[in-house]
Image (spheres, helix red, strand yellow):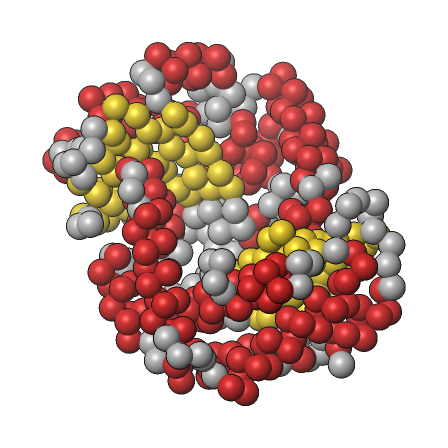
Length: 422
C-alpha cells in the first residue's frame, strides 16, 4: 500500500494512505509522549491525560457532546497510551472525514480538563489499575518490566501508581500538555478513501497556525544485566502465569527480522516448537506466546505461558532445553520458510482495514525510523538465513541475559529458581 509523507514548517508530520477500495477512513493523531517521558512523581499522567482529553473542549464542553457527535456520525473512536506515545483516532464512513478530523483535532488541541471530571476520572483509572492487578497475565508482564529495568521509566507502569492518580492536579495536566503536545512531536495519519489535497487543506486549517517549539526528550534507558533475574509472587488463582525474557534489540535494528523469525519458530502458531511441546505433548498449558517487544532504545524478547502450578519447574526446564536444542542443532527442514510464510501471511491479514493501516504507518513514524511498506518488510524477511536466526539465538539466549517472572499459587519457589538458573 502506497503512502504519502509531508512535514510542515512547524514540524508537524502528515502521512496519508489512500485506499480507494474501501468506504471508510481512519483519522489518527499520535503524540510522541508516554510513560517514558514522565518523572516519578507524575508517572501515569500520560495515560490520565489521554482519558481527560475526551472530557470536554471549548467547542464541545462535555464528554457527552463529544460522544454524541461521534455516535451521530456512526464513528468508532478510541485512544491509547504506551511507554513511547499516546494516540487518538476516529474511524467511520469516509464521507464524514472532515468531521472526524475536526473532532479529533479539537480533542488534541483544546481539551479543558474540567476539575469535576478529573475527580471522577481518578476513580475510573484506579479501577482500571485494580482490573489489571486482578489479571495475572497482565500483572506478570508489569512485574517483569520492574524486574528487568528497575526504577526507571522503562520499568514503570503506564497507568502509574494509585498515589499519583490521587494527587495529579489540573495544573499538572496543563503543564504536561503544553510541554509535549507540540507540532514537532505530533503525527497525523489519515488512511482510507481520501483525497490527499483535501486532507492537506484540513491539516493547514487546524494546525498551520501553531508555532514550532523545541522538542522535549526522554531519558535514555539503562539496559545492562550481568546475572539471571528472578521474581515470584504468590497469588491465589487456578494457574501460574510466567514469562521468561531476554534483553533484545531496539526498534529499527536491522537484525529484528531474524529475531521475529526466531520468535515465530518458538511460539508462532500451533505448529511452533513450544506450542507442540508444552500444549500438545505435555498438556501443561492453554496458551504459550513468544514476542519480540521493541522500543526506541532497547528491546525485550519474551516467552509467556499460563501453566499447571504443579509443573512450573518442569515447564521452565523444558523451555530452556528447547532453546538449547535450537542453538545447538539449528532449524528443522522447511522450518525457516514455513515461519516466514506464517509471519508475512499474518501481517497481510492484520492489514485489511483503514485503522490497521493507520496504526501500521503511525507506529513506524512515531518511533523515528524509516517507514517500511509491506513489500519492504517481505524483502527483509525473505533475505533472512538460518545462520542469521541461529546467531541471534546464540546472542540472546544466555543465562546472564535471562529473567523469569512468575505469579501464581503457592509452590516450590526454590525448585523453580534452581531450574531457571542452572
